[in-house]
Length: 212
Image (cartoon, rainbow, N blue to C red; front, side, top):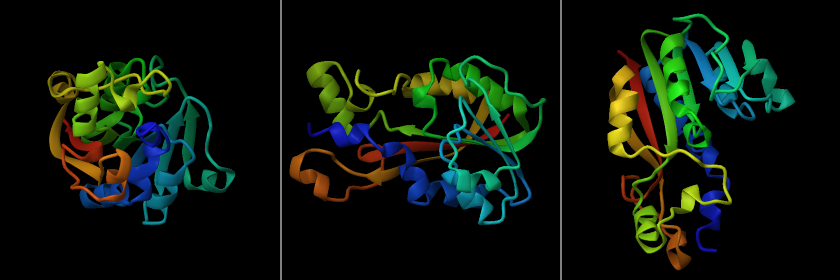
């Protein structure tokens, strides 16, 4: 279908295209202790390690890291981000990242509280997720009551409208930056064109947050 590609392979766009690396370099310092949550294959850890970040921990429900990338992690733990307490004490990290993780979680609010707990005072929380506000999502929802990025056949189960984001995430964090990655309109011939990286056309939305 015209939106099938939207359901596949989008999770790493913000990492592959360099936006995630740009953001952590913009706001972070290379001596910071980083927790890469939902580490996946380890690509983000590799990218920041090569930029001088040396204290990197990872956490995921299982170890999906490619063997060649395990060397970039100083520490790695397996844990269910929905239910389990992160296996580190309070105030352990300067940075927590979650690139395209939250939309997969059954209990994102537990995850957000744990990220808050393990962050040091004024610690940074970088998150991204599919952009619920994309005009294509809105049009398909009006037509069918469903959204392409959260259909039954993919593994996205959580979404954050602005009001919910404000009264949950911003309860614990101050917003430093909100932006979008990969402008597109995934319909027929329009897929070939580039669109602005804004609320109406950005494939992914990201937030840079600071612990209150």
